[in-house]
Image (cartoon, rainbow, N blue to C red; front, side):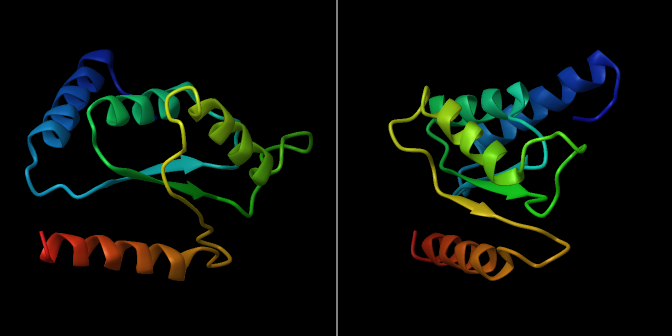
Length: 124
């Protein structure tokens, strides 16, 4: 999360929420989640807010090739922990894709997913 004064963060939050709530052409949100760290409350809160507002989303787990620190969890452990926590809000978690900009993991899957979302919009 960006380091900025609280007033600026509040402005960003209002703008972002307004965008998601008022954008008639929005098909889905792609929620980027850093898999190299344990689940973050801000990511859980964002996913919960999107779900409460019936905004379709896909979790994009980034940095799936990394691990922070020697004793940190592996990205797949962090991903499982996040999905376990998200079950408090959803009976079944939204779709998710593991990615890495270093290895290219998930690139083709993400591009296909975005193409399918675009096709949905064109037929909407």
